[in-house]
Image (cartoon, rainbow, N blue to C red; front, side):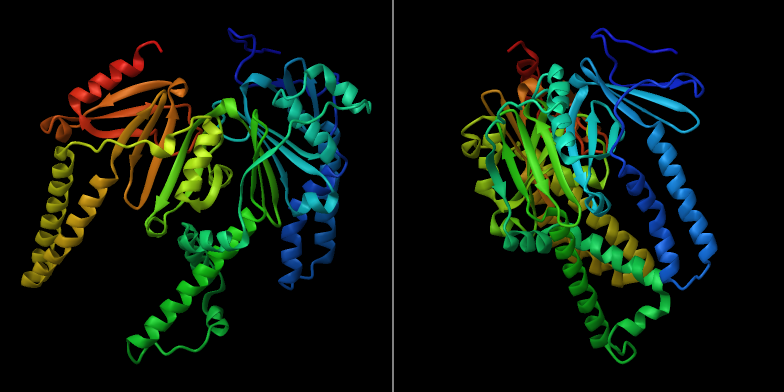
Length: 489
């Protein structure tokens, strides 16, 4: 068996293949309810088949039996154990795999209770590590008490030597006091659903439903005459929009119900979810940056959301949902939360420095070029009627000016602040000691106007948005910042 090492004694994560006929290593098994949890995934489609009217009972019974048998074998072959300062997970039916995850590589630990877990009274524990493309470790069925003890051990909130004593029933040390940093009320959840980015997702779900049901969806909707005039079209559009908003609100309620953010001074705890309950634990030492996001709908009401950047977190929709420390609040609440999490007062009072006027002129020229291109295409396709594209000039100029006004950069001690974005204005707060590197970049167009952008490169999770940037700085100022920030603290 070949195992790779590193200078620190442990690799980022380690997966090895064991001989299937060799002696099985000892370790902890999952809760026996894991068999039911795994079978639940397979039996779900069978239930759909029954509902659809298929009566192949012998086939369905055989499939259910095979699913349960596979679950039993899988449970027998699955082991996990704590080995020094690492957790070892061994699994596999025909080909055995062993994954070693050192404690010091763990970025976050999340407890998940989906419906199937709640039915069987167990918890799934997910382990995120540095550089993981997906969740590195999954223990899909643990007793809630064991899951909590293991979570604290993985995050080094309790010493590794105390696991056996805890399991033996010895007294557990007092838990640190949890301070509530944020909590969402029902009305805030509804507003978050109305003003968030889920309306487009809901509309897409509606479209998929229409493709799935085909013409039958017409029987579910009121009879609307689209052949007479535009009133029927607008009525249908209003109906679809209302449905999208309702679905958006429902999705937000399901995802962020009972949202609570707490901190014990060592880690952040996020609890949320209605049907699928989640408890995410993020060590404060793993926080790379915080972002305050304000979209176009929320800015007039001074509402914002706060997201966290954690190194190693896998990408995807679930990672985006787990990244929220405050799905919706006032801008003042959002900035106060950033101060509390980063332990840096006065961030709400930081005055951002605007970019030079040359950055504004660059955006105006870009807008003029787009309008000119649209007008030229219109003249070719529509003749003189293509001149109507010139009507785009006013909104294009307004958008260019808004994009310029959203740019800004600042600094408060060792805290760097970068702001950019029009549709979603993002203000990023990056501690200097979290910087992995700095990158000074100049495009051809920036060089002509003596501008440059400075990227604040942090240890982001896979699938995350780009690094925070100081966009369109004066090139001399950008070079000076680069030298200052790379000098020893």
